[in-house]
Length: 469
Image (cartoon, rainbow, N blue to C red):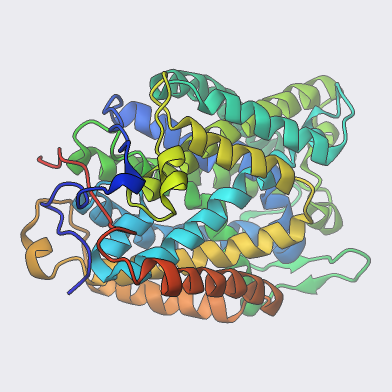
């Protein structure tokens, strides 16, 4: 038995005076197309390609496409888990609502902390790439450019969700065009065949060429999962999607397929078109574009990428503010904090939660990038692991008969996923495991001394009323 409300029950217990001023409901205003545009923008395939993938080129070289491909296969299993749980438990709380409803409040709390880590770190990681792609027209300090993008994304996140769907949709078109141009340029300047991606070679900075080992690829899977992880945004938007029982799964699976195509095709082109393994391992995609074309084309693509980064920031701030909104509605914090984070502004967005996500993100742009990458990779992998555990428990008791999208090959898919993700975590850098573990340990103490003694008034996971098919 879990110590949460069953899915059919509405809302939390009656709020006491400390929690007066309960939050308004989010409005169901978008369909599959709008949800896919927003979710695909959160995956931000082009900005991920230009900002995160270069780090993978530096660690696994020509095996980057293979590593991302393996990560994509793992993400299919993860997407199945998200699709089933997201339609079974459609909540803006996303992972924590799904896991907490099925595996207990404490497990849900751990998932919330992991998702909060990802929510706070990923936007500045992407934003930090802005300066590199503004360089053809404007030279600006890298952390300053990232902080400016985070603040701009925060302002946009205060607007109506439907308006943001249009904004992000326009930017998404530009970033897909940029990724497509890179693919054409890379393939048209091929230096090696497709087989080079199966026999990985990497040239570490200042070192000699070396073969990529299986353990190097498995270690790189944490970043590969990070590269395609944005499809989970669909479950955060489930309270604002029309007919969530059907549209959450469609949005998750459409987004995963499209994002993998937009990322993998240019990665293959870059791998084949790089003039040398040293150039590929260096990960300077802007330099490769200029080499293949001319400065005008390079400038156009760079500006498209800069817009894509801004687009990603907007969508991530939207997504992450919904997580904080849901945590306040479920009373994860002292009463004054809950009231503030659950406040809905005139445009229908949780404006305080939006500011809490965006402003610290601007500050994190001044933190070492490798540390941000490492903690995010560990957090995403651990979060997927707990979601897979919840998927194993999703067909017991009254949940067994609840109307929801059901994954094929259950329970084999989540069981195998758990084993693989445990191994991926085992191979991660101990420094990042310690950082993430320390944060989770501190959150566990908060649970032990504040949330656990108050099961009736704190951390009561709730679901929206309109869950019918």
